[in-house]
Image 1 (cartoon, helix red, strand yellow):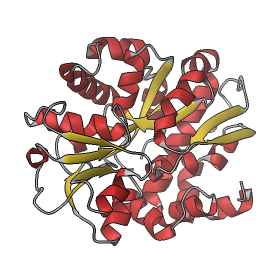
Image 2 (cartoon, rainbow, N blue to C red):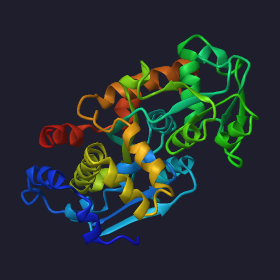
Image 3 (tube, one colour):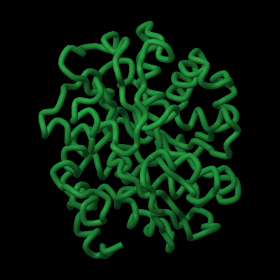
Image 4 (cartoon, rainbow, N blue to C red):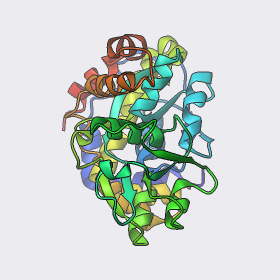
Length: 332
């Protein structure tokens, strides 16, 4: 990556540096079992904490840090379960679906609240107005499909029979919406920022602000189960670096946005900066990640999208030890 260690370190403010120095030293911890870690590079800017975490990971002792190229977030599930990447952030219902299907992942931490926004054309003012309308999604089972389905069911709409799903990856649902070919679409950064900048449609639901969605994590960090089992010390240090990255995005959105552009993770600084300001990165200490998985697992189970009850999802696919330790360690 065309980004030097010195340039990254200078992107931290003095206040940020002071915060970093307050974090307990890692010298007393056990030795890293591996110094290599891999994530996926996707267009989703809400994954910023893992994109800005390279030097934080180096400070934890990792020397080989890779971002494997991915065309969309749809590739994350297979990449983590197959071991192509070791960790990644993803939409909570996606992890529920993977665990229900027996995928070898372990959800470790919440990352942030509310990055998804539902945009509608004129005449669509609520979820109920989606009845009989064309809603664009990447694919059945994709994050946008799962989230709109859960929102629809929450207000009594049957997402299977009462919404006309239009699946398309090229053109994207946002492009179809901009061209007036569908009635609504769900977007995650930088899509909402671009639609607003172009004055296309209006926000029907903002998951960062509207209840109950704003009361739960949106994206959560998970690791390949075998990596987590074999390398617990490395796992804790990865989680710590990502949570420090979350704090960096929350505390210094200007430099975080610049880091995304300079690192090649974002094409436009203005959209990146707006995304850093729009996504509530400052909530991870306040929310319980288990509550999030329980909430979405129950909703998906009621819809028949997953067979497992929430208790089984949590038992089979989570490990909160590292998150709970780091909440105490990384106090505000």
